[in-house]
Image (cartoon, rainbow, N blue to C red; front, side, top):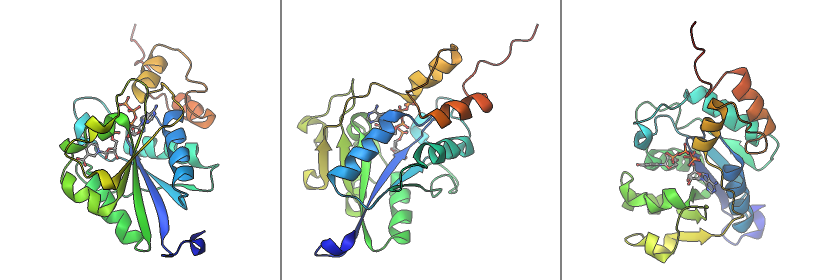
Amino acid sequence: MTDHRPDGRRRIGVMGGTFDPIHHGHLVAASEVQSWFDLDEVIFAPTGEPWQKADRDVSPAEDRYLMTVIATAANPRFAVSRVDIDRDGPTYTIDTLRDLAALHPDADLYFITGADAMAALLTWRDHEELFKLAHFVGCTRPGHEMDESTLEGLPKDRITLVEIPALAISSTDCRDRVERGEPVWYLVPDGVVQYIGKHRLYAKPESTP
Ligand SMILES: Nc1ncnc2c1ncn2[C@@H]1O[C@H](COP(=O)(O)OP(=O)(O)OP(=O)(O)O)[C@@H](O)[C@H]1O
Ligand SMILES: O=C(O)c1ccc[n+]([C@@H]2O[C@H](COP(=O)([O-])O)[C@@H](O)[C@H]2O)c1
């Protein structure tokens, strides 16, 4: 683990997301970055109130948290944190990173994003402060450009772009498929399919006769 590193510090990945629902695109991104940076652990942090998604319905945080726990349970390097869902108010990554840095003072943090999130980083709260707390890793995502021009205005020495196997999966598409009665098998982990069905997430409300 850490004893092969000259500085003896742990390396922790932080995979932030709304995870409504978590899907294999998220899991592959986390797994690829874990391997790329030899991370000791990847902590998934489901958002509490994702302020940039305030214009749409977001499922209860507890449901999104439990789906994330189910999806990550089999991987000994994956863990899930409640820091964002237990904090009141809108979720800002600056708070996520401050909380996790305080909980893990012996670790360097690597915040994992997809290309779309990376392109929006300049709109995030206190974005210039973020790079003091973590290295940022941008993963390729089908349908979203990611090249040097995306990084305009950001500190390039604190960012790495990583090409990962392309999975054209989005939570929006998963929710729409469930609403239309179409399958989400193999887009999300089996346990998440079962959870969605059991709790009737994303289904159209029963029509009243
Ligand atoms: N298929 C994918 N490949 C690579 N990265 C992804 C993929 N899907 C999501 N991500 C990244 O995972 C993080 C969390 O994403 P999020 O939970 O918003 O999922 P989403 O599929 O983008 O959701 P929605 O469709 O509801 O906006 C973001 O950084 C996003 O860019
Ligand atoms: O800090 C911010 O202002 C900020 C704005 C938008 C998104 N984020 C983070 O980006 C991650 C992906 O967010 P989302 O909404 O695409 O699921 C998640 O960890 C969010 O908290 C953070």
